[in-house]
Length: 520
Image 1 (cartoon, one colour):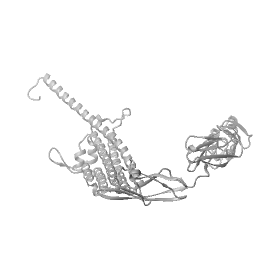
Image 2: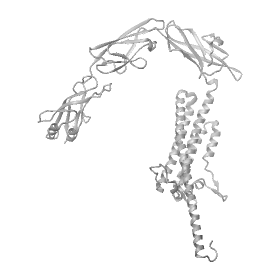
Image 3: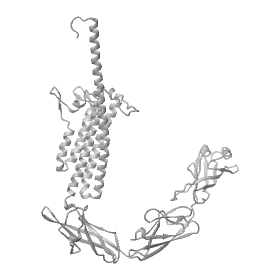
């Protein structure tokens, strides 16, 4: 296009052609930058979702470590080590991203919530921060140190068990920092190959992708720890015989009824079952879930043990599993359990929640009566609103399985609502500036009272030294009271008394007086 002598028209055409090519290159660059931005957003969403799943997996491991320490305590501890190392490196990568945005002066659009992808074309931000000539800067060395520290921490955990060898090799491959060969066949160091000379959005996306690698590796290891222990737990050697009684306690003379199961109701047919020295007929005792029904007379009142043995076939050999459990025989009830949920008395004029039950008797076979007593929702739940008198008696009757009835009663004291505490600006005494008293709110508070009973102040009196008492309506000083307050000297003791209030229920006594010393 530039050879020979060209006319002015041809020169103009050639110039326009060059401008057109440049514009095409610019548009393509913006498209590529936007593509990096979209990729970064996808990685960020994936990181958030994976973080939530990882948290659930780790919680599951910790809970299993408490419930079944012999199977899950060690894997749970390893998982916590992985979490600590992963969070540390993940947060470090996040700090690098924040620093990149700060140095590039890139801001998130408040309307779209997105970064300015098409404007993030600078290549010098990380180039100047991480590289100098053919070496790394102090910051570049720090980045590599953090990456290698993370790798060492994870590989230390995976080195604790030979079964983790495959996962360790996969992890090393994902986070390899070996040199890479460029298009010219030259070996390039890890950091240079992945970040030097790249636009800011490309480097930002690469950091988010590394965070995604951390989260995915973390999830893989949690599943590894869970999967390994679950595999071990499925062998019958790790199952226990469990006695499931139809109820936790039995009356003297009743028959014990319940089931003996292996682990989690494993449907594994036994070849023999012996309980208390007697062999049980398997054709009658075993149900479809693999549970064995037990049916024998319970002993006298007290604690008893159940001993026996399940026999299974595993790998062609007999595998005996011990049955060890206990149950308690209690006497037939002749007294009820009656208790106030919040105190050993009931208060007049308010709803007192109560729990009433008979030991060993279901709620639908228990009835209770008393002045102001009503049945509530929930097992054994009642409410009482006492009115007159100083005591109230609650009578309880229970119907036993054989149709017989037993009864009991309890007496509760009835007390009035306690005297509330007067306050202004949250203080019942002490020092306050004059202005705080003038604009303050007078309150009547039931301190250390177990019921939620809001009080509204209806009136009070205020006495300023040297001035007559002033009666105020509501909970704030009126004009007359404020005028008297302004005449008080610094250090004067102002009294607020005869504080009257009302509630949604009972009549409330006047609150205790408030004494405030003016601090100015």
